[in-house]
Image 1 (tube, rainbow, N blue to C red):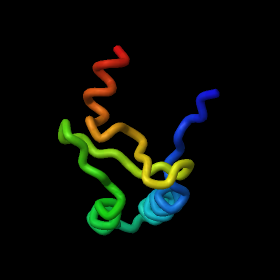
Image 2 (tube, one colour):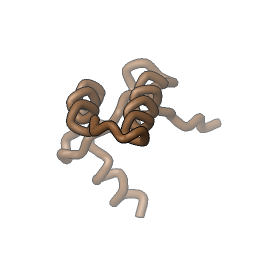
Image 3 (cartoon, rainbow, N blue to C red):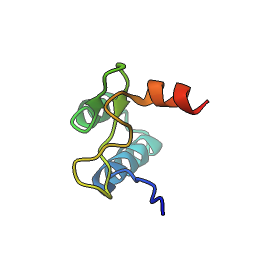
Image 4 (cartoon, rainbow, N blue to C red):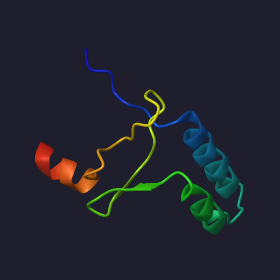
Length: 74
């Protein structure tokens, strides 16, 4: 049975925190951008992916990249 991957809870909490702060009028986009870079993993096609919560060491896309995967699935 296929079990879909999910983004790590730390990343979801990070996005919620910064989105909430933006919602209250704080301009935290540059700070959020710097922090998010800690989680991004660059793939072979130049796109970025995030680590998966379900499987340690796995990412949401293959190392080949999200762009290549999208074209394969079309």
